[in-house]
Image 1 (tube, rainbow, N blue to C red):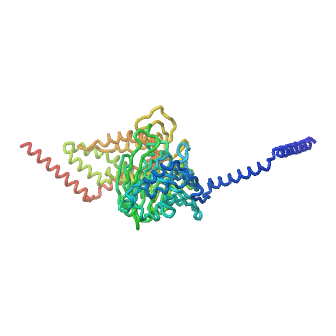
Image 2: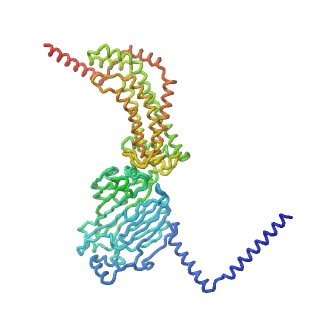
Image 3: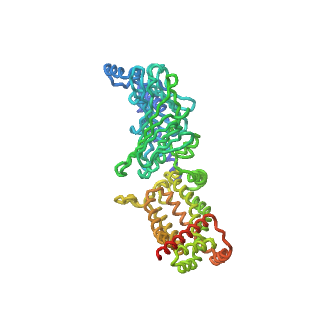
Length: 634
């Protein structure tokens, strides 16, 4: 009965509420005039939403859609027209000051004054402080053309008003900015935006201006851009911010990394205003860009003061006239410095990423980039780094085996080497000859332990270049690290320590500890077995210093580096310690090694050319020394 009563009461309450709502709606019903006004407002809202749609539904616009925003009176307008000659016509034309267009990846604003981009916002990315990524904003970029006219004027498009229009071409959006002499004669910037694409088809062309241009005077593009800071450490970001360009059939060069620089290049395929993880690229679609003057200026002198921009890039180059007109087809890329994204355009744009030169870059492109891409496709990014580190260490484990085997041989030979040193204490050259002969017969040259280590350098350096430039690691967290492409901070310092910074990163500390114990195991063993040679540097003492210097270098230098790189070194050295313990305790038997050495010593050892030449040089030096000693006795 209680449940039924509750249900009936609920129904009654619902009916009462519904009745009250009906009554209120009736009491507040609008008059016919209010209904008409409401319809009009709704229609205006629909039109506004169409214009601001984020589904790339651009509205076709014409000059009649705009109001004239010019504030010049008739006298000022006449004076301005007299300065600009034929282009004075553009001053009186209507046009929106800012034209906004959106695609899946961009929010773009075009400036009527100058006709170029006033703002470029990347919709899919934010910076270290969760602020949207802007590549162009607040007048950090300028793209202007200067040219001569037939009536002996020199004009610059910077302050001249272009007339905007936005149209559709299939799925693409076309933004046309025209600097008009008349309705049929103009200079046009044409931007074609494709869905979900960071490359804008950009063309500069003229129509009906062959009698307006002074073709004896070059028409010159001047493009400047300050690179906006996006990362937590502006100094670290600046280290990977660099103007890069491809020229002369595929050669890639760069301006200076950390100082001001300039260069003039004859034939340029593309030039990249590269920021660490984002780039602005200008590429030519019809022939190369000729005679490009490039400059780069470092804007970070003091990290505490210079916090907004990293570098200022400029490029100037002429456009060629063709029948008195110009027509240059270009591509404008605003997007991530990501190899997979850049490779799609088949222009070699991915070569702008600093993977390393020569064999180092080849290792990254052929091995580590595909491997990490595969692993990160199904593993969390931090785990992918650990798995890749394990695979690399397994691949290089034979090198550690060779190194430890060499150390074991030197340890076994040490008593004999010491005996040689005592026996020939008065004849240092003979001691060196006998030492080399023994090592050669036993196959235990100290160099045999160094050479395998040298084989690891290309791999280590390739990974050193890979982790800081891996776009996939950007803003990916692991354990306490918020961003594997930046440093992991566990404590903020109240002051900045030179070379160290104003924070404490944990991964470099862990890596430094692991390096210390690994070097204790390996370098310590080498110190114990390394014979000292008369007149040669004390390698044992140098190795002792390295045991402490290398971890200290890791601790200080990597405090501001990508935590993904420090994670790699930490795991790498832990695995190296494990491999070394396995080799020492389960693989290498010193008794068997000694037996092999004894067998090797009984076999005749033929000297190679290098060894024979060294022996001859040492013999000559000994003969000269004895001759000098005889001369002194006389």
